[in-house]
Every structure is written in C-alpha cells, then in structure tokens.
Amino acid sequence: MRSPDSEALHAFHAAYDEVVAGHWPATTTWTDIPGPYGTTRVNSCGPEDAPPLILLPGGGATSTVWFAQAARLARTHRVHAVDLVGDPGRSTVGERPLRTAADLDAWLDGVLDALGAERTSLCGHSYGAWIALRYALHAPRRIARLVLVDPTLCFAGFHPGYLLHALPMLIRPTVGRTRAFLAWETGGAELDPAWTRLREAAVHVPTARPVTGPRPSSEALRGLDVPTLVLTAGRSRAHDPARVAAAAARLLPDAETRTLPDATHHSLPLHAPEAEELGRAVEDFLTAPARPAPPRPSGPPRRSRPGR
Image (cartoon, rainbow, N blue to C red; front, side):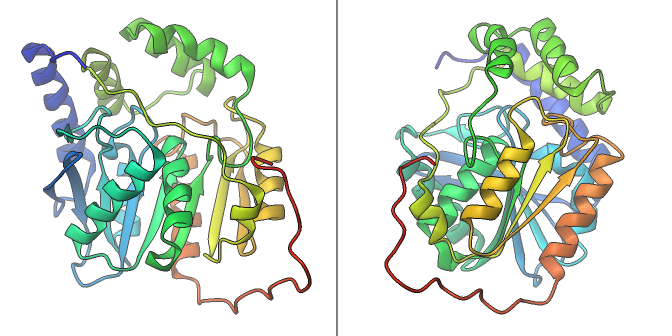
C-alpha cells in the first residue's frame, strides 16, 4: 500500500471530521485502539453504562456513515462505530496485515476487549455485515443480537451486473467513477453532501486489499444460536434481496427478515427516508424482550453443500 499524499490525506481527514462534527451527537467521543493489526478508530456516543452496540460500515463508507442512526440508537445503547483497518477512515494499518477471516476475528476480538464489551450487539452493512456474521460464527457467546443490513456474500452472491459496473471504480478509483457508480446503484438518490464529499475524498487515500472469503456454509448458519435481524434493500442492485431474505429465513434458526422497499444497497444506511425506517427497525429489534430460544431439530443433522 503506497503512502498517501499529505494534501489528499489532510482533505480526507477534514471531510471526515466535518461529518462527525456536523451530523453525529455533540456528545460523541473517539478512541484509538492499538493492536497488532493497526490502530482502530472508534466513534462512540450514548450512556457509558448502557449495553454496547458495535456498528461496522460497508467498504469505503467509514464509520461516519451511521450518522442517521447514531442518536436514535444511543438512547438505549452505548454506540461504538468502528473504522475498518485498511479501509478509508481514521484507522491505520499495523505491522501485521489482515489477510484472512481469522485475522478479522482476532482484530475484532481485540477491539471488543479494549472497549470492555464482553457481550455486545453487533450491526454491519454490506461488507461490514459479512464481517459481523463471520464474527458471530466465531464468538457467538459474545453477541447478544446481530443485525445484518443488506448483507453481501452472506446468503447470496453478487449480481454480475453490479460487479461489472463496480469494476472501473475498483481498478482505478476516481471521483468521477465513484460518483457514477453510486448514482447508478442508488437511482440518482441525493446522498448527504458532507458524506458525499468524504466518500469522494476517500478515492485519493490508499487502502489495503480487503479480506474476502466464501459465504458461510449452511451447516454453520444453522448452528448460529444468536437472535438475528436481516434487513434487505428492496431495490438493491448488489444482489437479489428476495433471495437473500429467503436464504436467511431458511438457514438461521433465530432470524427475522424485513425488506426496506425503497432502499438500494448504497442508499443505506444514510439516505432519508429509508434511514429513519432503518433506525426504527434496528431500535425495535435491539430493545424487544428476549424471545424463547427456538427448539433444536431432532434427529441426525441435515447434510448440506458448503456455501449454500
């Protein structure tokens, strides 16, 4: 990963700080957590003695993208929004690179330990949802409730057309390519101007290669005993939202699924009015009384092919 241009990095940090200062609650504080994989920036708000809630963004979005939900969720939780190491944001890479899903699990273990979150709710969008689901499979006893917002590569693959449109931006990111891709996927939705400036400034900030991996196996998903809410974007171009919801409902033993009909993959989680609907759904799920554990199926376990 090449060193960032100092002027470009300064512009990116200024845009980042503008979103936090202008859109997040005034009581928001930040913490830099050191670790072997790098230093992780966490933006936090809400009562310090409230149950913790970890928010993971999609790739390139930064933790600031949760601004439309932060104040609402901070009424009942201590919200910790995390910048992914190696991705645009205020986190920085360390001596040990993140190479595997096991590395991501170990990284998030360290973040939760530093925050004193022995048991937490966990919410992720897109790539952040993939990380969240993988972590819940790794450490289910640490997760009180799990929220997956239009999760990618968790229950279904990408639409080929989505990858085709994203390819130019991924190969050589520019402001114009990023702008065109988001306009295509969101149907031209007017995204928040301050966050848009941040997203466009991010193209000039070098990033590490993201950790990827296969979808979790059906067997693993059927064994995940964590209350889960899967929220899909009805107009998502990333994948087939109906297929995602159906697979989640079929495979997860304790899952609710809900579709936000007017949302697209990249209009979440920040575009109004879908942002309000998203925040309400997450809040209702996190604060609902605990349900009785679903009965375990009897008899020999079902055989399944990995990734289905």
